[in-house]
Image (cartoon, rainbow over all chains, first blue to last red; front, side):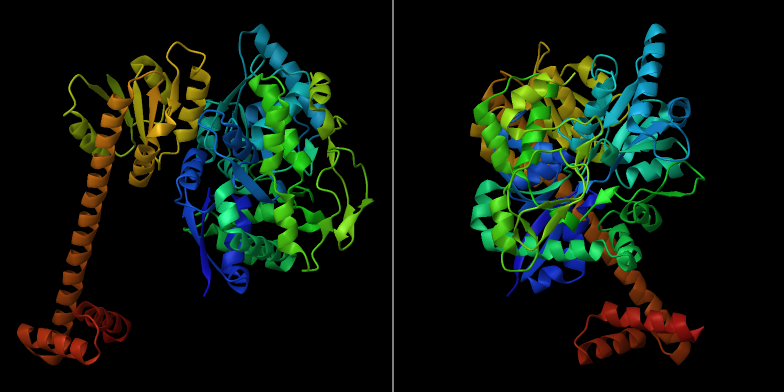
Length: 402
Length: 191
């Protein structure tokens, strides 16, 4: 008898793992049947999770933390036992702005691009114009990555430029109408902007924080405890789906599955671009291969490092203008559940890191790390400005940031 | 009390509006356009905002409300956790409510309850409509199958219907399924 889990998601490429786990039979092998509820706003994905319409959800990692801490609504503890992927978003600018600040045919150097943008921001300020950027949600890695990059390049978000929320399906419209001058959004929405000829992709978020944490699978904490065996079975099924996802011979078929009306309801050709790490940056351009665009499966990419949650918490303090609280830091860290990930995969032969927390941004090349199971090499983990995040000293880290 | 209904489906918005008219002392505003939504909200300065769960602008609205905490009339979703049951019912019905901080709980409850009722009523109406449409389509299929049988076998309409019914009973399927098979077969080979 298979157990049913209902999973909420937004139509984005990084909802791929639970979908492919179901479609390729990995869920069934694990004794699960997955039902999906598709929504068009994160607010609704979250409401369905909190009120039991879904058991688990594809969720913005910072939103899971914000919900646990009770930002904007009464606190409800969420748990994230699985990271659905690393990086995979991009910054798209209006063609006009891109032409003034970007280097052209390839994804730009983030430092050079940022400095060009800072110059542009100053020039426009002299004429009384402020640039406006769209992000998908206040509590999203999109917002935090964009802000991190801009701030490190001398542009103070909220003061020098405006950052507003734009739902992914409307980003292309917003760029076309001039409502925003740029946006940080997930795929396939950057590619949709390119195809419509209203924007140029100038930067991948992987260029801001290489191996930065993206969406998570979130459950209400009591649901995780109640449905622990099913959750662990889902983790095993999604790891298998991840292995399938990264094999080039499966890219086309997986893009076609994700493109179906019940999932992303989109164009398989556009979805294939991010799956294969080959983006077309501007209309009519050729594909540009950037191998780290959307990072899956390898290097235990789905492991929920506690230090990732702590970095997100540090950015929440930074951009909400809040003071550090040891209690909140602990609650935020507790959202990520490496313990559940470990018990799910113990004995499967899959790699498990030896530690559950690491100094983020400190790897510049291949590094062997201790593993609890299997052998593990992490290739890179770095912020473009060389910043290093030590989760044991969040106030010290924030004091060093512009 | 000023109530804003954000709904891109004009038919549903008016069903809700009609329901809320029962409440005394309410001014109701319908916002069907995505464009300029926040400016309209600011202009209206509502005490309660109702928005359907399927509206992609919810995140935009929540962002605005988060910022509005600094304003004179902060708005939040579900200010009172004691209303959990009411909130659950509204999520089930597919509507979410945002209210001005400090608004009397009883008044919120009345509006949300009514909105939930109207949302459910609208959903039933939709279901009825879909069913009616389905029935109509079924009748058309049966009519087409009868016509095909009458033409090809030179029989009368009651005889054609009898044939369909007999076949349906023999194979324990619905008449419309048999009719569909006849139409499909005719399209493939019969022309």
